[in-house]
Length: 216
Length: 267
Image (cartoon, rainbow over all chains, first blue to last red; front, side, top):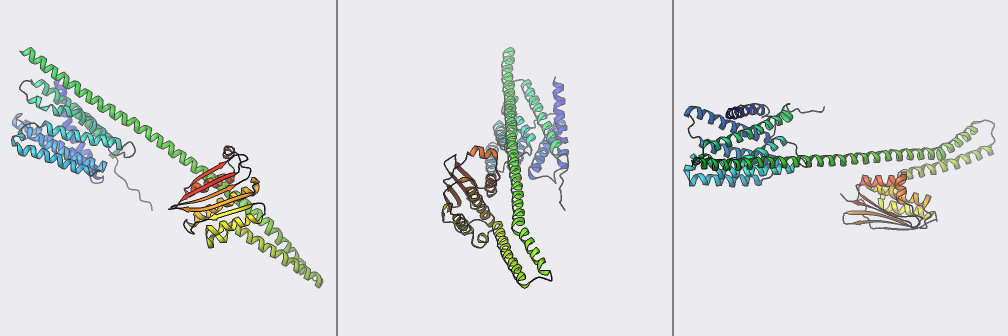
């Protein structure tokens, strides 16, 4: 059973690379929202690959410092992505406040860098879920852009809030590795579903190059 | 001790898995709710758009019918008032070319030609006036309606009451023409069908709304039946109001006369 999940998690790394290749093809011609989303995919894939390499080189030494880059870059880029889709300037203010809060956490307690940060990761995820819910509401009347990706963001981020919030259980000596493994596997499966939706979005809406019709 | 740990760990695991599954289900339910709501809204918007297209089609169709009727009327006018009389002129002129014609006869024929050409001139002036009244172009809607009321009053069949506080050129030239045509159609209906003895016409401007109100004491009609019958006259009025993006109120029933108001917003 564990082997199946290991394979699934390996697939998420390959799928990340595939997503980037697909989305980079249309990077120049598409709008700002598309560009921010591609950058988000790039950031997540880089963190994933760095963690893999780090794991191989240091024989599974603690890699929690990567996690900071992961959730902070994810939050910034997805906030910018939703700013383009929703058009609300207040998103900049919210992003600034949350980043200020996270920075304060790390300035006050510098050892936090090597520890897991459930509050920071949960807050950023909940905010992204709120943005995606707002976009779902907005898409009722107009806006067809990134609908499938938005559904993916909503399902993955809402479901994984609990996984990320309970991340400290993994490091609790009271519990065995089973819980950590189950949480990681669950996250892997949910992330794979999200990646599939990202690929479906590309296939349905961005596969063909953007063409401009010139009436002569 | 180990069993206790396993049992505690198992409970935490089950709770976590249950909560995550619940969140996944919740997320799916919300997404499905939005998906079906969107589908419903899109369907409703599509139906609305189809209705609008249908309405526009009806307006275009009614316009074409009105246009054809108008062409027919002009052709009839030209035939009756111009062509037939010009035939007489031509015939008389032909007689003048004959050599052995007496001087008296020549004078009589010339007199006839003069009389007929005068009538033809008057008729052509009347036709041109009916097509586009010069008063409307030169002095605006207020005076064109006044002239129209005078014409109706001259028939001696109606007591016409006209009031206006409209400022000329508040509406565009095209909008003024549409309002004028509506009044013309109402007066035409009054003469043909209403049996009315008094007619009131009011043209008012209040803030940014121009209102044309018409009241008669005629025999009225069944509004529902008139709508079903879709006579050219009434649908012509409705179409013009639709083009003006205005609103139309009609109050009538058999034996109670008719009240009609058109309200047009200034842009």
